[in-house]
Length: 156
Image 1: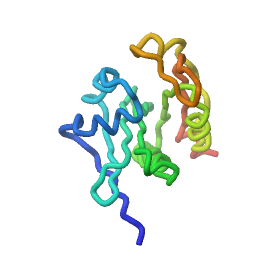
Image 2: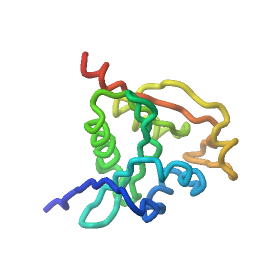
Image 3: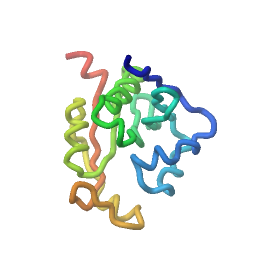
Image 4: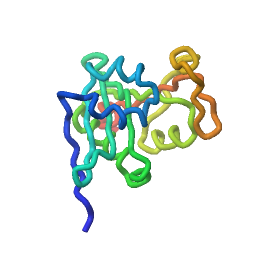
């Protein structure tokens, strides 16, 4: 029997999920910048929190994913894609942006979910994080923004 997957919106005590959010953004100071203003959705399997996605509204047509995290034991099982799909269904007529580092597997994942390159913020990680972040032998420097325009994609 497959365990049931449940996604709940967390309204109060979001910092309860800080450890989970630190998987997607390793700086607690950075997470604290958006945790109170974001919409936080946590994915549970058999009452265990195994993933989360945090979003903020940029304007009436634009949502930004600030954090997407899946615990290591549950990766490569479709949970990240499920959380993205969940947010996309909540905001069907929006453009959704995701900022990330230049980690090859992360960029491939978002591209496989039909996100496309938008722009970059030079030196974001070096300017905003106290210690270098190295993932897959890549020292993160620039923030890469990808997007998916759900309204445009629906018209195709």
